[in-house]
Image 1: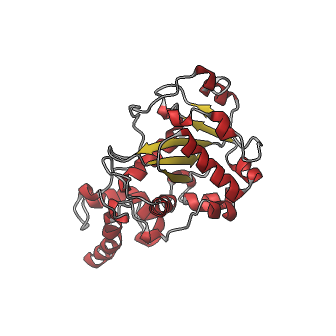
Image 2: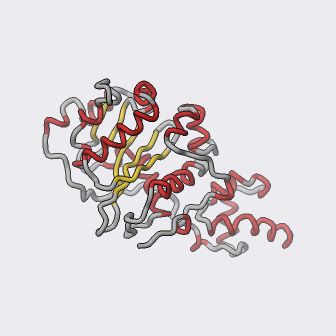
Image 3: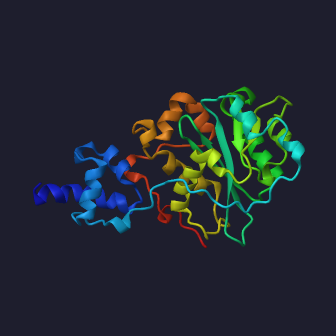
Length: 279
C-alpha cells in the first residue's frame, strides 16, 4: 500500500475513532476502505494511523455488575412473574427494562428499554427513581402510541428486582384499564439474564461515564444519545443499525412516538463530547 493510499484511509479512520466509533462500525460504513476489522486493528497496532490503540473506546461487552438498588421485598409481587415463568413462554422477541442511576447528589435516573429482536435502545429521564415515575413513562408512551400499539410492542417485559418496578399491576394496567403488558423479573443478582440491555448500558456509559451527574440532563440530551447508539451498525444485525431494523419490525410511527431519528454514519459520536453539561 502506498503512502498516499494509507494517508487517504487514515483521513477516514482516525477522525471516526476520535468520535468514539469502533472498528466494526467504521469498516461497515466505509466499504471504500477495502479492509477487514482485523486489518484495521493490525494497522493500529503497527502505528500506521494517526489514531492509536489507546484511542479506541472499550468495546461494548457484558460484565456482571453488583446490584446496589433497593430491592422489592414483597414475595407476592413475583407470583407467576419469576424468570422461570418467563422462560416457559419461549419467546423469540421481548423487551428488557432497567434503570441507570446518576452520581450521588442527583435523584435523576434513566429508565431504559432494549428490544431483543432489533436491538433498539430507549431511555427516558426520571426526576426520581420511583414506582410512580416509571408508571408515568408507561402512561405517556401509551397515550402517544395508542393502547393496542403499545401492547403489540411491549407485550412482554423482563426486568430486575429494583423497588421502582415493585408495582407490576400498575405497569401492566393501561390508562383505560386494559392490560397493556406483562412484567417478569430476573432472578436475584442475575443481571446477565438481560444481557442485551447491559451491553447497551456499556455504550451509554461511553457518553455518560460513571460519576457523571444527570442533574443537568434533559430528555432532549437523552434522545440525542439514544439516536447515536441506535445509529451504530451491529454485527448481530448483519451490519444494519438498530434504527433501520426497528423501522422494519416496529414501523416509523412507533419510532416517531419514541422521538427517534437516524444519525448519518460519519456523524455518530459515542464520547462525552456529544453532550456538554455541568458536572
